[in-house]
Image 1 (cartoon, rainbow, N blue to C red):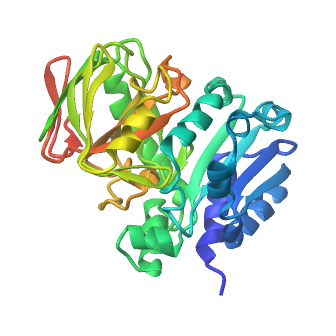
Image 2: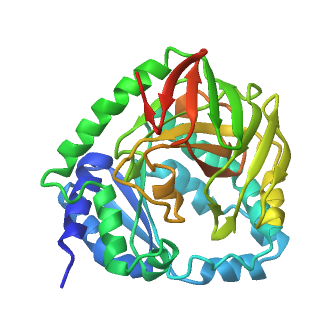
Image 3: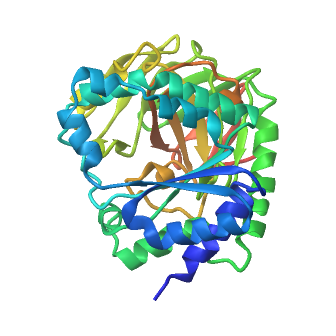
Length: 366
């Protein structure tokens, strides 16, 4: 029997997250096994009057590409990619995998080479989003593999995913509008501050955000959502951060990550697992050792770590930092082919803004 939450999610994504209008060009990028959800999104987008194209991805092709491609193929950018980068008004990425470790056997230097080659395309897409020329959203299709990573049955994981998006509520959009209003209070506060100092077990780090913009993410940047983020002044980051949770990237799991920054740049790095992968990503390009994003997770419906960044970076009571590319809408200017979010638990931490305590025990106190 069809899951009625697929139809409900499709309506929220099409009409709220992406706000599709008649005549707009809309791209769905999705794995082939996500058909039950994709069909509902496709149907709803057509009813909204959009011109819809679905880019269906077949399992295993990415692994074959990274293992078999020569250097020229790894760095090639086709004319079609460049055209698509300009063409669409709205894009939806549906994530999901039936083997979340598919790329764990790939040489990380090959992944880094491909990321560096596509840095320009990535940057241009972010710039279009910042200018309002492109609306983008990413969401998840639950699978057994993701459920296993999260330590749940598939049915429990589906409940976890959909409840995080407020789909258990009669009117999810009303729920997200309430989240937006609550988070705007935090954004308004942070927009008036400059020096942010974060202290937690193993973490003592400072950055500046004066003149940058904090962004309120309430179901339109990701789905589910629930965070506020900004771009730190690139050379202002100093101190050490210990990321409490494993850092996941392209199916690779790096545990116990510790980074030390001096004048914005990572000068020391360590991990108890995945050190070689961490170092390869840090060496992607000149911008990979700088932070492109700083953020606070505010979705208190997400209470546990699931080994998927879409959810983990939103956990209420956490903060995350992204190595690499800035999101231009925040005012950040760091450029990189990398954008890797890493999550730190703040439920035993404090945050000071311009020297004043503003956050403790996992919540803002403003």
